[in-house]
Amino acid sequence: MAEKGMHEGHRERMRERYRQTGDLSGFAEHEVLEMLLFYIIPRVNTNDLAHSLLRHFGNIKCVLTADAASLCQVEGMTMKRAEQLRFLGQVMRLAEKESYLNVMADDVNSLRDYLTEFYRGETVERLCIFSVSSSGRITGSAVLGTGTESKVRFSPSELMNFLAGCDTEAVLLAHNHPFGSPEPSQDDMLLTRLIQNRLGEVRLMDHVIVSGNEMVSLRALGCVRAFE
Image (cartoon, rainbow, N blue to C red; front, side, top):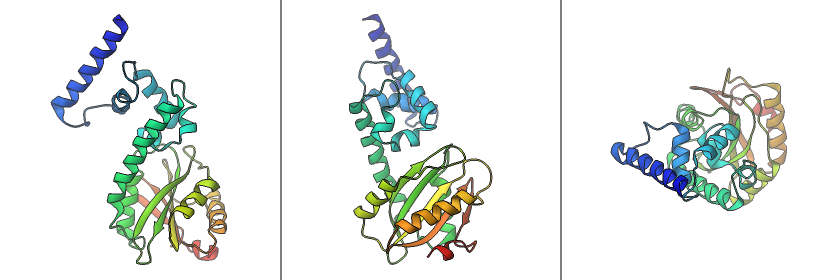
């Protein structure tokens, strides 16, 4: 009972901190995730779980975009808790859609501004796909895979699910290099070929790589043209 009261007191102090400031700028990343978990796991210490999730996934964005099975690999996460956390992540992704509604895939400056912000804070590589309308506007996105700080894993099933769920004639690929140069590696070239071969009649507009505030276009390097 004493431990329960201690956790309740801690939660109330955290909530009071938020009420006083009205934003999360003064909170550490683990504290933000800890507070989010308050609403999923009542009356239990969520600090340790928040730290464990961040150690496993790297940052809060990766936690919220992970699939339920991956979340369940972390001690303390049940399938029910993982599904609730994933739901919150899906809501976040839905809200993010508003930020790219006016991004044109062929406008280098607009695309760079959007993607550098999109990948800001990432500590591992993350491969994303964006559907592009006939007018060149980005209309949707999905994560195709995550990896380490220097290599990304690709999920063919996620690609097929994305293509099946959207009516698009063209797509844009993007992934990040969290550390170092945005210049493409040989693995990046091979990955582009692999995905392009699975796109069927869907056109690959470009594959761009982001690092910090820099972005490199494989099309501009003359690479994507050879894959079409």
